[in-house]
Image (spheres, rainbow, N blue to C red):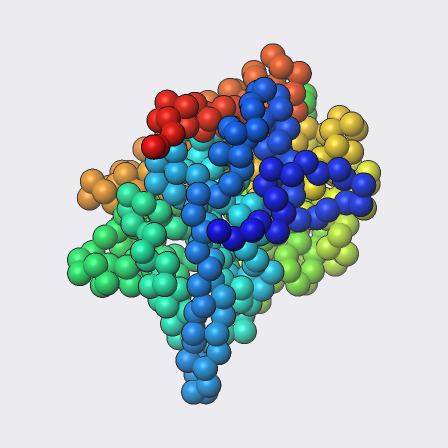
Length: 430
Ligand code: GLU
């Protein structure tokens, strides 16, 4: 068995801040286990990934040379159903990062009560350094290597950072060709023409904005007069800007991987989208001025939405955050040290496993539609997504109030409790 670089059962003493997502995920689980009074055995069952694969992915480059990249798939927990989670193409992907992201998927699925365990995959590449045909070959070989553990009843990938609908189409095709027939339910986030769901592309952003608005209202901030800053303008951040503006929130600062822009009177979302589609970046959007990307996190706004990568809010900047509400569009954007500082300062943090769960909720709807070969209308998808997000928001906030917990603690405890219950009911084999 692989030894975890960060032992999942270890207790972390945050003397020097550890920015590792796995350390954060393990610390959150430890605190939930302690709150629930679990013994070490149950804690170990919840902490250890059930199954992990590391694969070498050989690639024939367009110039004829061969190179080998590394891919991973981690199935953290399978107690409540098949493993579910995205596939990330990013140079910083490591086995430990994938383990953390897989654990968060387990809690996210349990919290939203979708019948899945948690998984995550990744390939350690910078997709911008590869041509489209090369990305297709990487995707197909990676899929083929991990296909023994994939399947609509085993493990269902979806897009994440650096992957999209096309990646899912290639994954679905590779898996289906190897099995000998078309199996749409093996991935979600597919193109609509291949059985993708209406509403899936915007689902994560819609969910983030749904709970962000609820959090603003619960803090007595009227969304119509509120301001917001959004870090990231990709699949999640882009939609968040649009839907916040639609709700009357003034978005005054936005960043992407190339830079950041600000407009105190509010950024025009249509101009921003048009500029980003034309140039590939938010930088130099008409009507905005350039700012330091780090200043987006500390902007003088009511709401901050980090919608990029992990550990961007840490002990070095948490005390300078001015927002009263943070809705975590990204997975793991706040380190435990920053979480403590922000909580102490009274900032309401809607945790990732609640805030960005809209994506996996509609992935579940897509999987149901694929398995039944029956499409739902966009209205039905939206209505059911809203109902799930509202129910989870109310469940988490009520529980937090009853137990005197932060929203992250409450969400994690609720989710961990559900997974533990599944373990108990299923029992231990043999
Ligand atoms: N990658 C997304 C997430 O982190 C979606 C996962 C899914 O739909 O399976 O939640």
